[in-house]
Image (cartoon, rainbow, N blue to C red; front, side, top):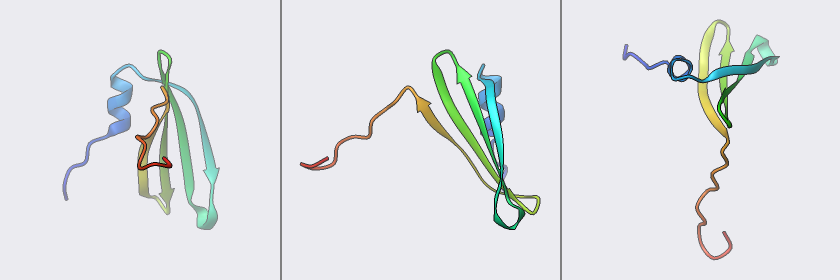
Length: 76
């Protein structure tokens, strides 16, 4: 099995602090963890989805600073 990097551990060791978290119960016993990370004026949400003891998904979403997506075409 290929070794995967632990992005959450890397963020914490890089100086990000946990500013808050929630745990949401979902259908069929799944749990979704939302961890709010802060570093200076930057905020990132790190989500982890677990079902039956198996991790299904994990990833970060940058909340601030806001970076708009590039426009695509005439109407954006």
